[in-house]
Image (cartoon, rainbow, N blue to C red; front, side, top):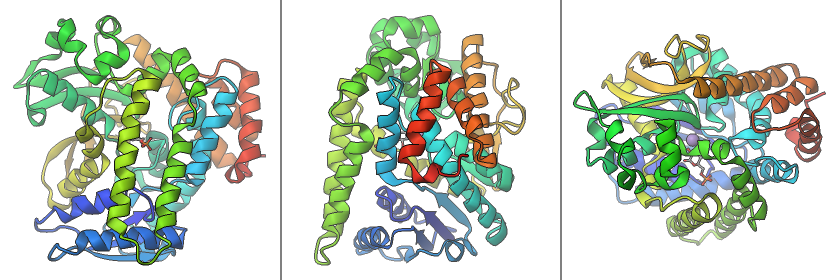
Length: 445
Ligand code: G6P
Ligand code: MN
């Protein structure tokens, strides 16, 4: 079985390969093709993978190419994990927004719109090629903003593209643990858009245990989201929001904290990863050790940074490393081996959340089998959450329209309609600011 990883020179690829190495089952991945535009990055990551594989018998074969069509041809699964504009682009997304006094973040608000505008045309090109060259392949989208990018690709790939995120499963796991339950036995009633969803219930053996958590301030205050949002607010909401909703519910505080930070998250990661790729220029350098060291630094600072800037509690290392690669592997296994499972994924709605149309990509529990991911019908969201979901889906649709038409006016509209952008004039200046710094937005006329 052949797995192609787009963005194969990316820093997180060894996490994916590490997960593949633990899979000894039948029908597992035997061939990994890394694709990237940057040959040096590809070579650096391939060296890390070679060291990871050294002691493992029958490790998946790894090849690398900068030719996209060659990478796609004959793939059974494609992981799309690209970062258009690199981490420098992410840092610019953050900076331009913060200078306008609005949220500069990778996926939420103005920063997420800018990243989406740069990424959608590239993702659509990949989707078109995949539909032609690997029509039976399943495309698993890791690329942020994941919901929007998955919807863009679904217009060409239908339900053959599935978007993933580790945040809902991480949240469900933390809630289950606080309740003293086995996360694997819990049914998480979660729905929304990517990075914009709520846990409304958590059923264990058919019984909803979330009311027990919401009624107990000590329990509620003891885990990350409890500290982040505060006990009172969670009790008022009657649900546990995805951590990214902190940017909505505490917008002023997060914007201010980000403005005061010495470096944005993107700038910090850009520096750190540049050092890793720089080290890899030495052909004698120990690749896996260098990668591991950089990763450990990243996780340590993520925790420290999260505490300071967002007021969050400690996030255990398990929550960071138990992430994307495991969701992706579980999804790939369920499809390839027809092992029925339930995962929270980004898929076309198809009536699961009745307030949105059938083609809108939402984040929702899905039954997965060899036929793909089938969203499970969920109870409607309360009005305030429905309002946010519809507003942000409306913004995503404007981003898709702007990317499809190249219309600058549509891009302005996308920014202006976002609940976290407080004036049409700000939206106009954001489009100016972003088109000045991003060559990838030159298509907006
Ligand atoms: C979580 C989110 C991802 C995001 C990541 C950011 O896992 O679900 O969508 O990419 O955090 O991590 P980073 O280290 O890049 O800031
Ligand atoms: Mn995510």
